[in-house]
Length: 168
Image 1 (cartoon, rainbow, N blue to C red):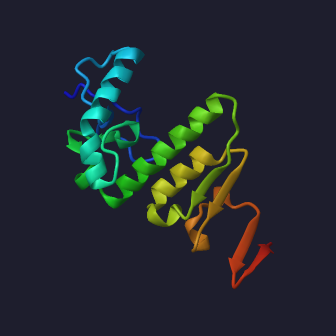
Image 2: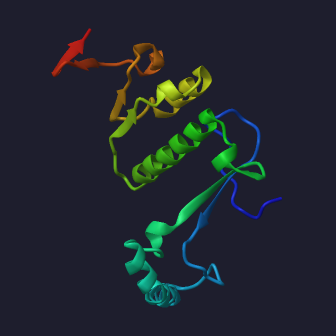
Image 3: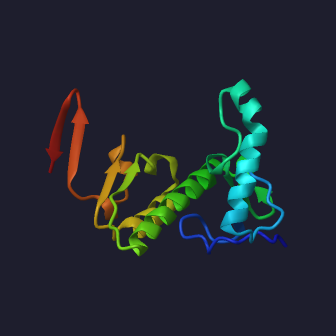
């Protein structure tokens, strides 16, 4: 069994199979509970150590912007093993988690789903529609009208040839 945190039961993808997520910092820290001062000291030392390599490559090599998330499906990394639908489900789950965090802080963000339904099978489309149907500000774009579940069909606009036209 992995010691990495497990994601909550699938809300978007099909049930079953373990899903995990782990934060992978670009900076090696011996103690994951290190305090802020020790973290700042370690980051400063890493920046000093990597300076010449960064100048040579023209990019920064350490820092929070270089950190990553390791996603797993059961014992396997999602990268390289997840199907197209599973990859999209993971991406959407992370986007929805960010949305939920903002809402938990009392912010009501605009949720934009830009042509995501075309990449999902019918079951995932319906589950996503259930998850986002209560959003107070939801913008859905699509290239194919039938890709959007009926539950999310509200006011529609068609955009084409330099014009925007309300439909229905």
